[in-house]
Amino acid sequence: AQSVTQLDSQVPVFEEAPVELRCNYSSSVSVYLFWYVQYPNQGLQLLLKYLSGSTLVKGINGFEAEFNKSQTSFHLRKPSVHISDTAEYFCAVSDQGGSEKLVFGKGTKLTVNP
Amino acid sequence: SQTIHQWPATLVQPVGSPLSLECTVEGTSNPNLYWYRQAAGRGLQLLFYSIGIDQISSEVPQNLSASRPQDRQFILSSKKLLLSDSGFYLCAWSRGQGSTDTQYFGPGTRLTVL
Image (cartoon, chains in turn green, cyan):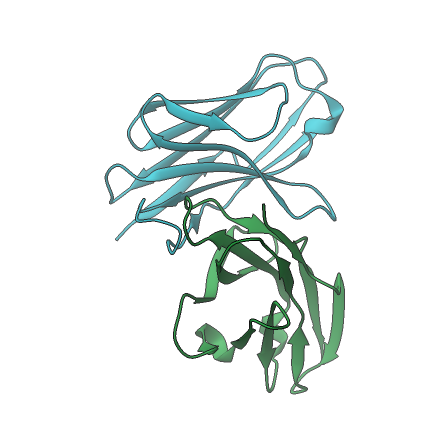
């Protein structure tokens, strides 16, 4: 079984500042890794995913994430945030040899202040 | 292009009343379908997962049930709602191509049980 830990439930930052949202996972098998974003009162949409290859993955809206197998981490970063990035961010994993079912973390609420 | 619809958008129901939430997907065939519940501070909990008509697996024991009367229709039901059923219910679909698949989420239904 897999589990996902998002270490920060809330992250407040000022506009144009850099941000890092942390994600660690635990699994006895190899996993694929995902970051989803949820804007207020909406469904989730995919930001990026790591399947294989380069450990640095670039996604939409200027976000990127780096897979670190030794630290079992998949932290999300953006060098300069905008007010419009205010949302909840979810890290998720799926079992490489299993079904499409995702295991989600509890989410990190990013608030970008002017 | 594919779209996913959920209705109603919001619902307020008394304890002990029945529930029916509907989800439909357009623009694809034979999708995998998912029902999630999102409660405050608890992330996303997978409730039901379906790979085809009459092929539904329940992920957690509860007083909810799911049905898939048509290929692209997924219904979440309850005979008697509990206070603990309150939350944000999200439907999602994927192409059924394995654990690298992206899940696409609907706009959600906010259910309040009083």
